[in-house]
Structure formats: C-alpha cells, structure tokens
Length: 423
Image (cartoon, rainbow, N blue to C red; front, side):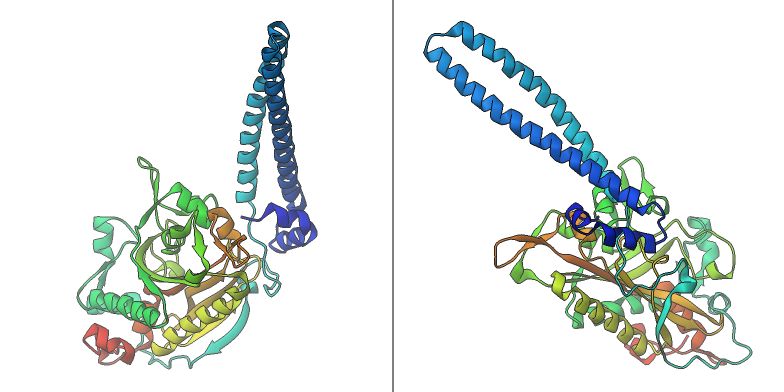
C-alpha cells in the first residue's frame, strides 16, 4: 500500500498518478487518508499527554500520602479515574481510526511509473519489441484443441466429469510434455541464481492482503470458507509472504526465489475462442520468479527478469512480443509491468504467457518487509515477480506452431526433458 508520509510530501504527484489510472475521485481518496492519519496522530498525541499527566498525578498522590494528606490525595485520585476513562475512549478511537486508515489505503492502487503509457484498455499497451518469425503453417493446420484430441494428450471432458470446466486432465505424452516444461523452467531459473521454493498452495487472509490479492481480487480467488483460506492464484503470494514482518539482513540481499505451483483462478468462464482449450483455465501450472531488492537496484532487476523470460522463449523457438502495459491495464499493485505474448500460429493471435512487474514498496509496506542498512536505519525493500513461465498457452503455441504432416515436433531444448522429439 502507499506510504502516508509520501502522500503528505508529494500529494500532487500521487493525485496525478491515480488520475492516470482513470480514477476520477483521486484527490478525495487521498484527502480521506490524510484526514484519518491526522485524526490518528491527534488521538495519539492526546493519549501521550494524558499519560504524562497521569504520571505527574501519580507522583503528586505519592507526595501527599507521604505528608499524611490522605483526603487531598483522594480528591486528586478522582482526576486519575477521569483520565483512565478518557484514555480507554481514546484507545478505542485510535484503533478504529487505524483500521479505517488501513482499509482506505488497501483500496488505493499503486502509482504508475513515469514510463507507463496513459490508456484505458489493453489496446493502449505499448509495443516494445517483436522477436522471431511468425510460423508459416500449411492450410491443413488446426488449433491446439483439435490437436490434443487427435493425439489424445489432454482430456477436457474427463476434467469436467471429475471437477468441472477449466480443469483439464493431461495424459500420456501430454503429461510428460507438461512435466518437461516445468523442469526446464526450474532448471533455467536455478542456472540464473534463483533458489527453489516449494510453498503451500493455500494461504491465509493475511498473506492475501500482504501481496495485494485482497481485497482487490477477492472475487477471482477460490475461498475455503471453513478454514478461511484461499487457493493461490500464483506462487508469488506464498513466496513473497515468506518475508512478511521480516527485517532482511543486508548481506542476504538480493533475494531471488523460483517456485512451481498449480494456480487457481475463478475468472475463467466466459464464452468464445479466446477462452477455448488451453487459452484460459481455472487450474494451471506455472513457474514463478520473485525478487526482493534494494530500491536503487530494483529496475536493473526488472530488466534482468525480462531478459530471463525472453531467453526462455528464444530457447523454445517461439516468436514473441513484449508490451509495456498502459495505466488502465496495469495491475492494482504494480508500478511497471511488461507482458510477454507468444504467437499462436493456428489461432493467428498473440497469447499472453508472462507478466514481469516491479511493485516498488507497495507490497513491502503491507508486508512490513524491510532491511537494515549500514546506517542501522530500517528501510522498505522493493518486490518484483514474473511468470517464467505459465504453461498452458506455452503448450498451446508449441503444439500449434510445430505441427506438420507427421505430428508435432518438440523444441530441441525440451527433448532432454520429454524423452521424445515428436508427438
């Protein structure tokens, strides 16, 4: 969440940033925060003054008792009782004000980076680069949902039988293909210096608030109501929350983690070709990279993470493009995000396969994730994450782009992992 101290110091910049996102009542949102913060401070100030006065009265009572002036001491004690009653009231006001302030901050998104283009929808995203030649497929080429039926490698009907729509069953070489992608992505991340984490795939409410999925994406998450737990939408959530309420030692930085998990999202469910087959699922596998960095290093880290994702797509022989998301398409917690899209030859469309984002201090402030520098002062860190990679659309593009009369060719980089070069 945003830092109140920064809002006070740079209110006009924060108003402009929120308006860039299309928020029309930006100034009133920030004014509410500042009013609540002022009320909180004033309440605390009165509490402190009352405490000082209570201490003074306590000393006065002690002195009167020593002098044998019990009646005068009893009169003074009534003032103490009044202060206790008022302090109880102030403590309740302070607690409710702090909760209201936190709730107000939770509902304000991050401020876009200056380089983020202004726009309303994904049509306003900025094309940064296109890499690779588009596949030249024969007229007989078919989309992946036909290929997987033909080769019997993924079964959507069985998934519907067992669970429901959006939960496919991977079979035979399809399952081996899926596992090969996971291992390839994990090995590539390990070679780039990321330490592997295998986190839980359910998280508590505090973890959801820590990384910003709550309250923003509550409707998109699967909620286990009895235990009040959530199925994760990405490994970013549990991995980043490893550092909730942590002061990282400076010699432990930078933090670089990679994790493979299933991911669960309720958002799938609309009709049309854009959600057909592997294009959008309720459950899918993904390898995620996460970094925690000092403020002055985070944008170099963002570039490094983008280069890592680009390297994966190059090795998989997939044409791709990089987009800088506009202000209207930017995630709630992000300052700057680059999307990677691969070209799906039979569908003749670009499919998003990765988002790489810098959140600066937004998540760290929620998490109370800090480090202690050489000056012994604690400072908030910056958090970053990226898909490296989400599997379904990668699989869809490889299946479609590599089809020929004999089947589907595997990219050379995957053959040591699949154990076969063709489906």
